[in-house]
Image 1 (cartoon, helix red, strand yellow):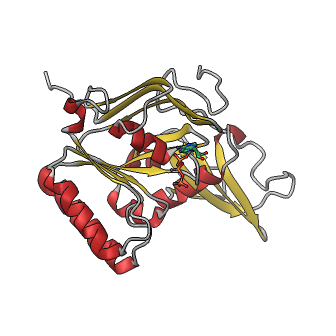
Image 2: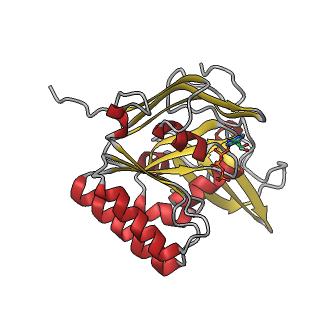
Length: 270
Ligand SMILES: Nc1ncnc2c1ncn2[C@@H]1O[C@H](COP(=O)(O)OP(=O)(O)OP(=O)(O)O)[C@@H](O)[C@H]1O
């Protein structure tokens, strides 16, 4: 029997409330070990809160978050983790290199990076991501990288956790998510408000737009799904997919990667 590697992070109904309201609520997800997870979401989605909960710097208000099966903040959990917070206005390039060297010097199993590259110019960012990826390849370090730069995540992440308004909106293996979506493009239908073909299942549409006479839509699809006649279908890039889910109306999809998970509006998933 093959032993399953324990998840680096396991969240069960995880919640954290501040005076202003819930920063994270009812979150169920796992971050697989040995992978690079892109943590994505608009400002205020709960990304930093999640990373602070993982380090034990914050305590959950509800539910549970485990780090390799241990409670965050305990010595056992702390041994596994290195955390690099937003580097703010400190001399960016050198500072980030030093901070990374310190973080790696701990020989962590799990490296949490909270937008550490936000203030760096593209060349330095590229160099530093190269350092991170080399560590991942050599040591099998698990990385959770919070970032707003979706185009960069595409080349480094193989797993995704997308938060919106404190809820898990999308989570899973990056390639599986790409395989489970299609972008369809074709002539806009005049008879429908959204320009999409009449028979198309609207519940599968993440986002759609009409430009001139052309309509484009990003859909969640099952494996053997056949696109409507005269429409071109292609799998999206990870960046396109993430953008569409960031733009889509809140509550459109439950997080169906987790049986028994919760819809963004709190309804239990059937
Ligand atoms: N210490 C705190 N006290 C009160 N409210 C907080 C605190 N930390 C975070 N919040 C609130 O929790 C919500 C989530 O914030 P968080 O910083 O986790 O989001 P984020 O996704 O990291 O955002 P950004 O991309 O802007 O860094 C926000 O509404 C924020 O105002």
